[in-house]
Image 1 (cartoon, rainbow, N blue to C red):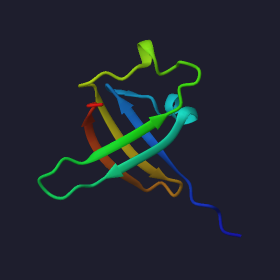
Image 2 (tube, rainbow, N blue to C red; image 1 turned 135 degrees about the horizontal axis):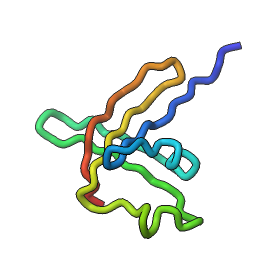
Image 3 (cartoon, rainbow, N blue to C red; image 1 turned 180 degrees about the vertical axis):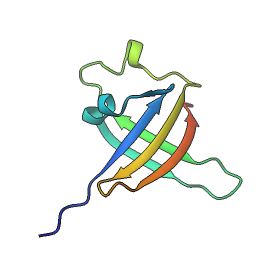
Image 4 (cartoon, helix red, strand yellow; image 1 turned 90 degrees about the horizontal axis):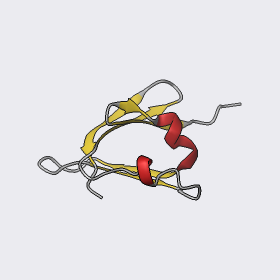
Length: 86
Protein backbone atom coordinates (compact mmCIF):
# COMPACT_ATOMS: atom_id res chain seq x y z
CA UNK A 1 0.00 0.00 0.00
CA UNK A 2 1.36 3.41 -0.96
CA UNK A 3 1.93 5.95 1.77
CA UNK A 4 0.06 9.22 1.58
CA UNK A 5 2.18 12.19 0.65
CA UNK A 6 2.52 14.73 3.41
CA UNK A 7 3.91 18.21 3.48
CA UNK A 8 4.56 20.77 6.14
CA UNK A 9 5.61 24.39 6.12
CA UNK A 10 8.83 25.44 7.79
CA UNK A 11 8.44 29.01 9.03
CA UNK A 12 11.36 31.17 10.13
CA UNK A 13 10.03 34.35 11.72
CA UNK A 14 12.44 37.13 12.62
CA UNK A 15 15.25 34.55 12.51
CA UNK A 16 13.53 31.97 14.76
CA UNK A 17 12.04 28.66 13.61
CA UNK A 18 8.39 28.82 14.74
CA UNK A 19 7.18 25.86 12.63
CA UNK A 20 6.16 23.77 15.67
CA UNK A 21 4.33 26.75 17.22
CA UNK A 22 2.40 27.52 14.02
CA UNK A 23 1.50 23.96 12.97
CA UNK A 24 -1.42 23.30 15.37
CA UNK A 25 -3.09 26.60 14.43
CA UNK A 26 -2.35 26.71 10.69
CA UNK A 27 -5.59 26.78 8.72
CA UNK A 28 -4.07 27.51 5.31
CA UNK A 29 -0.83 28.38 3.56
CA UNK A 30 -0.43 29.54 -0.01
CA UNK A 31 2.57 30.50 -2.10
CA UNK A 32 2.40 32.40 -5.38
CA UNK A 33 5.47 32.41 -7.61
CA UNK A 34 4.76 35.56 -9.62
CA UNK A 35 6.25 36.40 -12.99
CA UNK A 36 9.69 37.96 -13.27
CA UNK A 37 9.68 41.54 -12.02
CA UNK A 38 6.86 40.99 -9.53
CA UNK A 39 7.30 40.03 -5.89
CA UNK A 40 6.27 36.51 -4.87
CA UNK A 41 3.62 36.14 -2.17
CA UNK A 42 2.83 33.87 0.74
CA UNK A 43 -0.33 33.87 2.80
CA UNK A 44 -0.68 32.19 6.19
CA UNK A 45 -4.01 31.91 7.96
CA UNK A 46 -4.03 30.77 11.59
CA UNK A 47 -6.87 30.18 14.00
CA UNK A 48 -6.73 32.35 17.09
CA UNK A 49 -9.51 30.98 19.27
CA UNK A 50 -7.17 30.90 22.27
CA UNK A 51 -5.66 34.37 21.69
CA UNK A 52 -2.12 33.06 21.09
CA UNK A 53 -1.64 35.17 17.94
CA UNK A 54 -2.68 38.39 19.67
CA UNK A 55 -0.51 40.69 21.76
CA UNK A 56 3.12 39.46 21.94
CA UNK A 57 2.64 36.81 19.19
CA UNK A 58 0.90 39.21 16.79
CA UNK A 59 2.90 39.72 13.58
CA UNK A 60 3.93 43.29 12.91
CA UNK A 61 4.16 45.05 9.58
CA UNK A 62 7.76 44.94 8.37
CA UNK A 63 8.71 41.75 10.27
CA UNK A 64 10.65 39.21 8.22
CA UNK A 65 9.50 35.68 7.46
CA UNK A 66 11.02 32.81 5.46
CA UNK A 67 8.93 29.88 4.30
CA UNK A 68 9.85 26.46 2.94
CA UNK A 69 7.43 23.74 1.86
CA UNK A 70 8.88 20.38 2.91
CA UNK A 71 7.60 17.04 1.56
CA UNK A 72 7.73 13.75 3.46
CA UNK A 73 10.38 12.44 1.04
CA UNK A 74 12.73 15.20 2.24
CA UNK A 75 12.52 17.38 -0.86
CA UNK A 76 11.74 21.02 -0.27
CA UNK A 77 10.66 24.18 -2.05
CA UNK A 78 12.24 27.31 -0.62
CA UNK A 79 9.56 29.96 -1.08
CA UNK A 80 11.95 32.76 -0.16
CA UNK A 81 12.08 35.65 2.26
CA UNK A 82 9.21 38.03 2.78
CA UNK A 83 8.17 41.05 4.84
CA UNK A 84 4.83 41.16 6.65
CA UNK A 85 2.61 43.73 4.96
CA UNK A 86 -0.86 42.82 6.24
